Image (cartoon, helix red, strand yellow):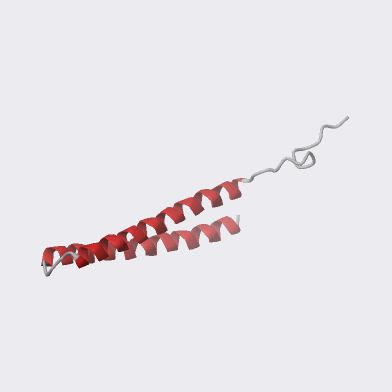
Length: 87
């Protein structure tokens, strides 16, 4: 008698694509969380600067770093989705 395969036995099989998509989803979620935290930090720095130019520059640098990081994360998301869907 032939032993049934995992799918025939009702056991779900997970492919490498599914694992990769799940891992990337967590990474992108974390990148979004970091972006939100950086916006809050920059806003706090702006509000507490009281005209201090060095704090204002630091807040602007924080916002610029967040924007660059978000652009990189979105680009990585688009590229990885394209690659995973075309494998």
